[in-house]
Length: 279
Image: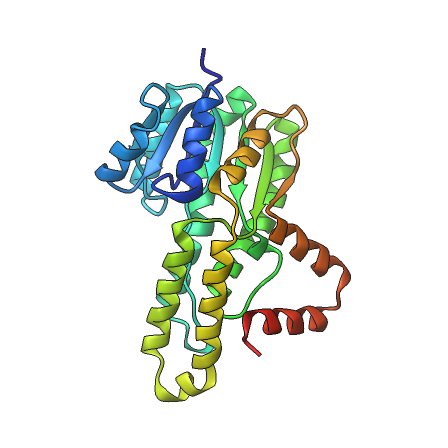
């Protein structure tokens, strides 16, 4: 017997795909948002009896509302706003279109998905899970678009939780540290593209430190937790009688949270610069 339907965005890879599979094994039916037919087939094959793919670009309103219509007949009990992208580079040379894209996917996409499904979740007293990051609590150099989107998502989620609690809808925020997913590789590719487009002056100012940051990110990714650990936190947020408002996932995330709570900002900045090689 099904525990109800959960709509998960961004299931083509990484955390989203692991979440779709884990929720299916927990007895949920999953509407799995993907960008293309090949990803749809791959995700459905994970658990054909439980996972139904839906083509979903969270920046395309017609696809968002079509997904909500699919959910309407399924008994929607949860929304997992997971879809995300990342761009890198120095703020001084940041392409504004990249910043807009970052916010459209990571922030506004989550808002539109929430607006489209809230009537269904209100009827079921369902749950909303927002995929934030430790990067939504502590920023790093050259990751300003990503950090900005996650800081904003944290604030939006806090407001949403307070607005919806009287209606019986819980909102939880997931804050992973490093996770072994393709987003790190994509971020490095974005950083490489940013580096290649720098003019000589900007390359002299930022090039060495940007390269050091990319190398540090690659090493961090190799030590990251498996995506299923994040999926387990998401499942707890959807099923617990007393879900947490925030789930910090991964040892590195917990260490960063502890350090941010006790160290002066400049001391923490110096530590990050030393660890990442961006001094």
